[in-house]
Length: 71
Image (cartoon, rainbow, N blue to C red; front, side, top):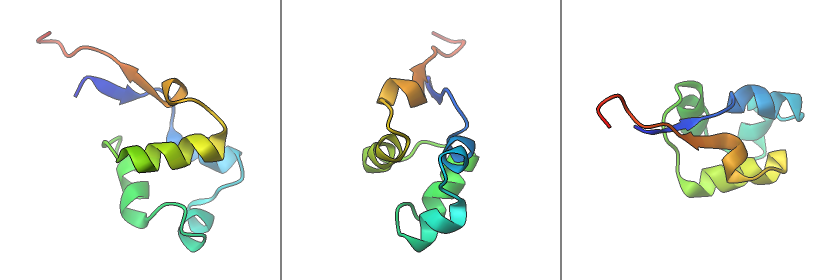
């Protein structure tokens, strides 16, 4: 997929004070979503929006377009 995370989202959230335990307990992100971030898998726009809100950043700070080798 040509869209990739520019940062390690889980690490960035931890630096901002949001441990995975806190994310689950406060129902900010579910376990499946956290696992997707760990595996660099795509998540929904709602989850991207939540992360941007928590990190006080823009979508472009999280994601980048990098064409595949075939392109």
